[in-house]
Length: 114
Image 1 (cartoon, rainbow, N blue to C red):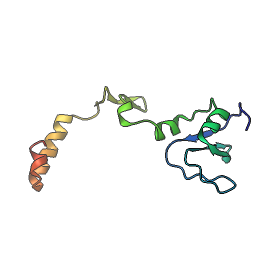
Image 2: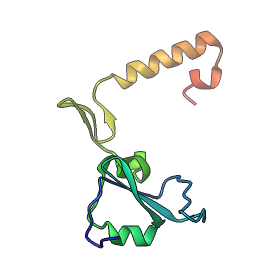
Image 3: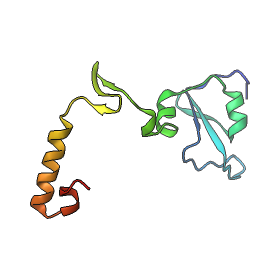
Protein backbone atom coordinates (compact mmCIF):
# COMPACT_ATOMS: atom_id res chain seq x y z
CA UNK A 1 0.00 0.00 0.00
CA UNK A 2 1.32 3.40 -0.97
CA UNK A 3 1.19 5.61 2.18
CA UNK A 4 -0.02 8.53 0.09
CA UNK A 5 -2.37 6.64 -2.22
CA UNK A 6 -5.76 8.18 -2.79
CA UNK A 7 -8.88 6.08 -3.14
CA UNK A 8 -12.47 6.93 -3.95
CA UNK A 9 -13.97 5.45 -0.78
CA UNK A 10 -12.55 4.23 2.51
CA UNK A 11 -15.05 2.36 4.69
CA UNK A 12 -14.23 2.36 8.40
CA UNK A 13 -16.44 1.29 11.26
CA UNK A 14 -20.05 0.45 10.55
CA UNK A 15 -20.89 -3.16 9.86
CA UNK A 16 -18.57 -5.00 7.51
CA UNK A 17 -17.81 -8.67 7.16
CA UNK A 18 -14.22 -8.61 6.01
CA UNK A 19 -12.04 -11.54 5.07
CA UNK A 20 -8.61 -11.16 3.50
CA UNK A 21 -7.13 -13.32 0.71
CA UNK A 22 -6.17 -16.03 3.22
CA UNK A 23 -9.80 -16.13 4.49
CA UNK A 24 -8.73 -14.59 7.82
CA UNK A 25 -11.57 -12.74 9.57
CA UNK A 26 -10.73 -9.08 10.24
CA UNK A 27 -12.92 -7.85 13.09
CA UNK A 28 -11.64 -4.25 13.18
CA UNK A 29 -11.08 -3.94 9.48
CA UNK A 30 -11.47 -1.48 6.68
CA UNK A 31 -12.14 -1.56 2.97
CA UNK A 32 -10.65 0.78 0.34
CA UNK A 33 -12.40 1.20 -3.01
CA UNK A 34 -10.95 2.99 -6.02
CA UNK A 35 -12.50 3.31 -9.46
CA UNK A 36 -15.28 0.91 -8.48
CA UNK A 37 -12.90 -1.87 -7.41
CA UNK A 38 -11.82 -3.05 -3.98
CA UNK A 39 -8.13 -2.14 -3.80
CA UNK A 40 -7.40 -3.05 -0.18
CA UNK A 41 -8.85 -5.02 2.70
CA UNK A 42 -7.05 -4.99 6.02
CA UNK A 43 -6.72 -3.84 9.58
CA UNK A 44 -8.43 -0.50 10.16
CA UNK A 45 -5.30 1.21 11.54
CA UNK A 46 -3.19 0.14 8.55
CA UNK A 47 -5.69 1.31 5.96
CA UNK A 48 -6.36 4.58 7.79
CA UNK A 49 -2.63 5.27 7.66
CA UNK A 50 -2.24 4.16 4.04
CA UNK A 51 -5.20 6.13 2.76
CA UNK A 52 -5.07 9.12 5.09
CA UNK A 53 -6.63 12.17 3.54
CA UNK A 54 -9.38 10.14 1.92
CA UNK A 55 -12.73 11.17 3.33
CA UNK A 56 -16.03 10.27 1.84
CA UNK A 57 -18.59 12.59 3.45
CA UNK A 58 -21.52 10.35 2.53
CA UNK A 59 -19.89 7.34 4.18
CA UNK A 60 -18.95 9.45 7.21
CA UNK A 61 -22.54 10.65 7.61
CA UNK A 62 -23.96 7.16 7.10
CA UNK A 63 -21.67 5.28 9.48
CA UNK A 64 -20.55 7.81 12.07
CA UNK A 65 -23.04 10.62 12.64
CA UNK A 66 -26.08 10.45 14.89
CA UNK A 67 -29.35 12.37 14.75
CA UNK A 68 -28.11 14.55 17.63
CA UNK A 69 -25.27 15.78 15.36
CA UNK A 70 -27.76 17.48 13.01
CA UNK A 71 -29.25 20.85 13.90
CA UNK A 72 -30.01 22.35 10.48
CA UNK A 73 -31.24 20.67 7.30
CA UNK A 74 -31.34 22.47 3.94
CA UNK A 75 -32.85 20.76 0.89
CA UNK A 76 -32.77 22.44 -2.51
CA UNK A 77 -31.87 25.75 -0.89
CA UNK A 78 -34.90 25.58 1.44
CA UNK A 79 -34.39 25.37 5.23
CA UNK A 80 -36.39 22.35 6.42
CA UNK A 81 -35.10 22.26 10.00
CA UNK A 82 -33.29 24.99 11.92
CA UNK A 83 -32.06 24.64 15.49
CA UNK A 84 -33.63 21.16 15.59
CA UNK A 85 -37.06 22.68 14.95
CA UNK A 86 -39.00 21.81 11.82
CA UNK A 87 -39.76 24.96 9.87
CA UNK A 88 -41.99 23.41 7.21
CA UNK A 89 -44.88 22.27 9.39
CA UNK A 90 -46.93 23.69 12.21
CA UNK A 91 -45.93 21.31 15.03
CA UNK A 92 -48.82 22.34 17.31
CA UNK A 93 -51.35 21.72 14.55
CA UNK A 94 -49.74 18.37 13.69
CA UNK A 95 -49.73 17.22 17.34
CA UNK A 96 -53.34 18.34 17.73
CA UNK A 97 -54.25 16.17 14.75
CA UNK A 98 -52.29 13.23 16.21
CA UNK A 99 -54.18 13.56 19.51
CA UNK A 100 -57.51 13.78 17.66
CA UNK A 101 -56.74 10.64 15.67
CA UNK A 102 -55.52 8.86 18.81
CA UNK A 103 -58.81 9.61 20.59
CA UNK A 104 -60.73 8.50 17.52
CA UNK A 105 -58.86 5.17 17.38
CA UNK A 106 -58.87 4.58 21.14
CA UNK A 107 -55.20 5.19 21.88
CA UNK A 108 -55.72 6.98 25.19
CA UNK A 109 -52.04 7.47 26.17
CA UNK A 110 -51.23 9.25 22.90
CA UNK A 111 -54.44 11.25 23.09
CA UNK A 112 -53.41 12.56 26.51
CA UNK A 113 -50.03 13.66 25.13
CA UNK A 114 -48.06 10.83 26.80
